[in-house]
Length: 125
Ligand code: HEM
Ligand code: HEM
Picture 1 (tube, helix red, strand yellow):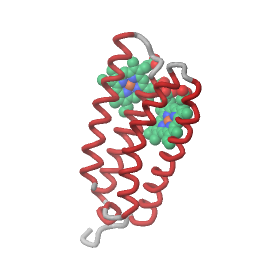
Picture 2 (tube, protein in one colour; picture 1 turned 90 degrees about the vertical axis):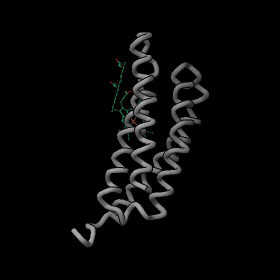
Picture 3 (cartoon, helix red, strand yellow; picture 1 turned 60 degrees about the horizontal axis):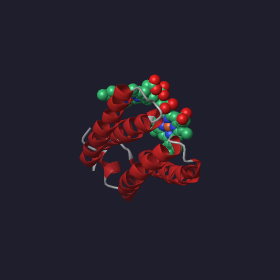
Picture 4 (cartoon, helix red, strand yellow; picture 1 turned 90 degrees about the horizontal axis):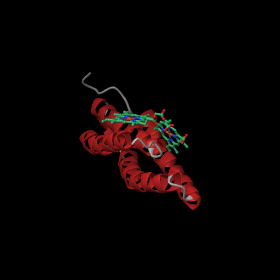
């Protein structure tokens, strides 16, 4: 599970960094929050979860870890698309961003509860 988090995280890193480079090239920074959340909610958060699960394998085996993985990765792409549409001036995309954000917060809540409940020192350590 840890490796799965890490591998999908580097995809967000590449996509997010590409958007950063594109913004720099066209000198238009409207989509900076999309870039920021692709690299922070995508790369940084998921990679950190992967590393956490590497060090605390018991937490990686739980249903909460799987729910977090799938919810996070099914919600992040539509969240970024809705946010981009909103930032480009479509005010009516606001509620969509809000609703998906609540789902994302719930996914992060699963991760937090999982770490609090199941991250424990391994028996061999
Ligand atoms: C090739 C790699 C990258 C490029 C070309 C790039 C480019 C940019 C650009 C052009 C901006 C907009 C700056 C502005 O609005 O004035 C920006 C903002 C930002 N970048 Fe990147 N970036 C890269 C990688 C990363 C990575 C790896 C992270 C974090 C792990 C990151 C985090 C952020 C954040 C948080 C902001 C928003 C800052 C703010 O709004 O004040 N970037 N980036
Ligand atoms: C459910 C999850 C999240 C939601 C709904 C959310 C929402 C937001 C909102 C509404 C803003 C203000 C954007 C603006 O000023 O245009 C923001 C900015 C920011 N958030 Fe998040 N955020 C989330 C998760 C995170 C996480 C996990 C990180 C870091 C690991 C993060 C890092 C940042 C940073 C650095 C900024 C400032 C960047 C900028 O101005 O473009 N966010 N976020």
